[in-house]
Image (cartoon, rainbow, N blue to C red; front, side):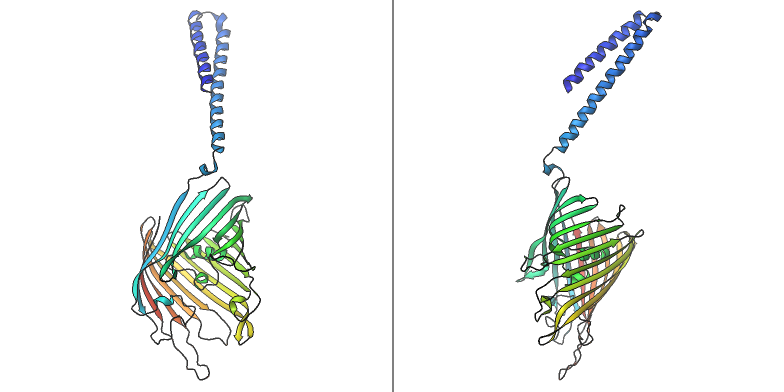
Length: 415
């Protein structure tokens, strides 16, 4: 291609020389006007040829780019997230009745002692993202989670391992592998402060944030104001599958006007036939979350959820469906872009049956979030949890539980 360019350039220069000579010799001769005009037309045509050659070079370069191996489509990216605290247990129940015997607590039983304090890393993510090709993307993520610690040691496990086929049809992507589940992912985006605490469904163990399966996710309308998310998974969280039963998830999300979003989610967990434990029977969970906010200014939202567990045990071998419910109200306000106040209140009742008492919980989270750098936050905060009194049954006296209060200084950053 370069040789052709040199050849045509030489022709143009030669013709230009000839053209200038003719102008000098035949300056006063009208008989040569036609010849001059002809030469000008020829020069114009030759310039167009060079321009076309340049265009051909550009087209060849674009074709070469498209022919690059898959790894050249995008640069692999490593990123991470860290949540760490210094915590101090200001208040705990001292009657000896609190601890592992008191279920469904937001504050882990392992740190129940009053005045107990220390440093902890609650979460560490290491994420690898890569565009395999124009259509395929993949993510691999490891998590180190102190809450899931075993034998006193933080537990490192695979959090995400999935591949996504983009645009399987217009506006929709297909994903296979260990991946996020719809309801917790949407709720966490609405809440916005995962560094302080999990969303309530996740915190109370109603819907896991991950499952191994296949999902279809995309927009319903052209503008993307209405979207859907469907997932079929093992219902095994990040563990291996142990039975033939699956969990089916559906999420519909809408943004009917600016800064407002609402999402409804539902899932059905098919489990083994009824036995004598609640965990062995089918469960259906539904939730609704709505929020309104402007980034770095304010945000307010609420979530409500309910779960029906079929054939829950009542007494002996008797069973009855059990309904657990909860709701969460949250908000944040930025005094300035770098400093926000955060407040959240949760209510949770794992069994709404009128005959079941002493199991509901109230949780309050209050914090300041100071953004000291682009991806670095310092967050002084408290968690305050109260517990419903356990009523007297037969010869057993009623039990009143003291509230739990933990003060924390949280450090959260991304890299």
